[in-house]
Structures are given as C-alpha cells and as structure tokens.
Image (cartoon, helix red, strand yellow):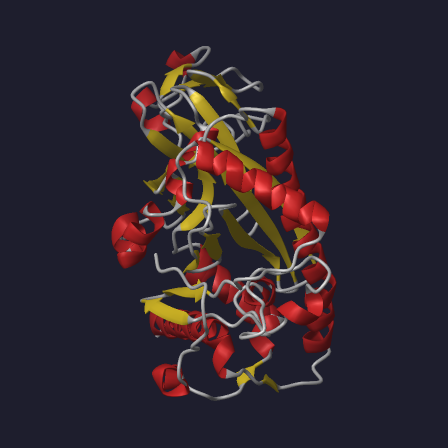
Length: 398
C-alpha cells in the first residue's frame, strides 16, 4: 500500500471520463420496484460479507446471521475439521429455526419442536420415530449456502445454483484484502445502526470525502489539511465491480487532547507488536455494499444491508490483533471504537435528510463531480445488473 503523507495530487478528470458524466436518476434511490429488483439481481446473486473467522475461534463454534433483505436466518459453523460452512438456520422437518442464540459452540443442534438433531455440518443425525417417515436421513440435511473466506472475512452467496467462487469474484481485490490488518485479526468489536435511507444513499456517504470538513469538523479528520481542505483521495482504482481509493494523510492532523491521547496509545500498542502505526489509509470497496478501511491504527469494515426501499442497516466491525495487553491498550481500543461511532453519528442525520429529499420526488436527477467517482461507479454497476435482470425476466416470459 502506498503512503500519502506529503503533498497532494488528485486524479485528473480525464482519467475518470470512462465512467461518464451524466446526471444520476433519483428514482432508484426510493422506488419499491427498483429496490425489489436489486434484491433479486444483486443481493441474492452476489457474495455478501457477514462476519470474520475470529468470531469462530475454535472447532464447533457457530454464529447466526439474519439477512432481512432475503428473509433468511443463516447458521455459520466451524466444524470439527476446521472448515467454515454456512447453512440455513432451519429444521428440515417442519421449518422451525434451530438456533435462537447469536453465537456459541456445539457439535450438534436439536430442534426444540420435535427434537430432530443435526451435526454442525448440517447432516441429520437422528429424529424420534424416524422410521415412520418415508424419507432417508441423507435427504433431510439442512440446505447449505455458498460460503467462502478471504483475508479472514466470511462471505456467503444465496444463489441456489452454481456461482463464481469467492476469490474469482474478488479478483485482484483478494490479494489487496490479504495485505490489510483485517487478515490477521483475532478479535473484533461490532456495532450496528438502522437508518431511514436507501442502502446506496447510505453507502455513498462513505464513498466520498467532499462532506468531511462540513459534517466532521468537530471530530477531526486526519485526511484534511491545508493542501487538501476537502480531504480528497489521491488515487482511485477500479477492479470489475469493486473499487479502491488511497486516502491522503495530513502531516499535521487536528485532534482534541483526548483524541490525541487515544491515537498515541493506539500507536504505542501497535508498535509493541511490531506493527507500523503510520501506514497509509487504503479504502477497499467490495461490491455490492462492503468497504474495508485498511488503516494500521484502526482497521474496520462497514457493510450496509438493505432493509427496504428507504431503510438500511450498517454493521461496523473494528478489528484487533491480540488480546488487550494492558488497561491503557484497552482504553485505546474502546476510545477508537467510540470515536468512530461519533463520526458515524454525525453522518446519520444528513443521510436521512437526503433520503427525505429524494423520496419527495422533487428531483429527477442528482449531479456528481469528479471526486464522487466511486458513487458513479457503484450506480453504474447496480444499474447494469438491474437492467440485465429485467431483460432476463422479460425473456423468460416470452
């Protein structure tokens, strides 16, 4: 990863001309029909990030994830063989959800309704009076879901048929992810927020820095400085449906005394482990709705899940390597998490205000500048998939 701490040279407009310059239609940000087609064309066919292997620290660990956009509950397990698997959290007898807890350990799962019992790889072990059923146990396994792991991050794909494997889907982004501190994480801190805004509008807020000095002046942003008052990225990269930006770092960031204390302690804790606390800030955006902020000081991932045409949920996971070594280090970690949460809370009200404006129908289009090119790239990718899905659907009706 490149370090950008001195000077500033933004990408030239000509470098981004291939993305187009047209105004972006607003209807896809609130229209129920468009939203429904996005779910089918994108979220049920793409690899979706749902967790990290550090949440499955030992064989027989499990976590449960609710994907509201698809109406499914998923059970993700680490088997006795160490393999990470994903399956529907459902008993194959009458459909009762098997697991009510969010996480835990167990080699088997028993349905509380009729005590059908499954191994943690999804196979039916036994059921009362099973000889009275006209079916073989092998036909009663829990339906599996495509699952893959790259850089410690767990992804699932809900498509029922064959899919492109995760590493091929990520392409060059797989190697980039494996270079980040996220790949070595042993612990994480998670928080979520629900927001009255379309998933794209929510995600777009975190794809541009144009708003930083206006919305985040209170919390202090290290990517703002005299040479770059808007905190614009110094480089972009595009990899199929995915994208990156290199974040310029101010040589003289503005912090409050408490913020600076937290930063110093965080850097000291990292240095003790031999980790460079000054590395560059690289932003890796994974289609459709995950990005990884690959700072060595505080790496985190942020996934935005759609809930409705004008509602979404953000899940932020802050990653750590090694357990807390001292009270000071614990303070630094907690401080980092709360600082990030403060920054996101500043974003929330303005995102919701944007949704109210778009949903009013007052505007038919919005206008994007060059430094909002990641937003344009995402919209282009979404639009292409929705239109292709609609053509496919119409062709099936012919």
